[in-house]
Image (tube, rainbow, N blue to C red; front, side, top):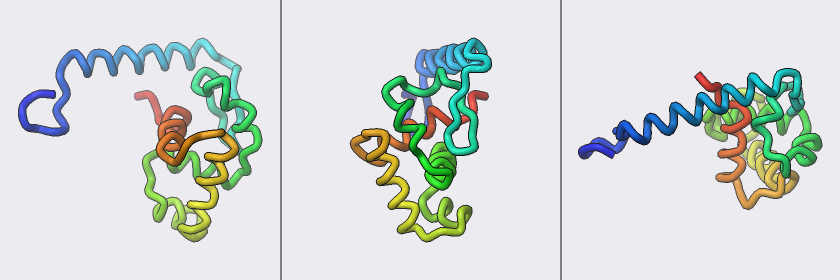
Length: 121
């Protein structure tokens, strides 16, 4: 961190992040046709931790859609509006996914969703 700006990042941290993104893009490219379906969405298999592959295959299409919006950083209320369901239903889907993927909570699910669906630009 530099100065008092909470959003500032030092050059070393930014360089490490850029290198990580480069390596992830390289892994995605190397994976080629190796993709896994999450609902209707194709995800490079290289982004999915091995221990979650079986759980991913059990997600419903609605759970997959919730996961995708979560990975894009959407709030529960936004996800509910976009999918025309209640916020309570979104929470139920989040809890079901945590159980299916054997996660400790929504924070872990959020991190996993970001790994799956956040674009590497």
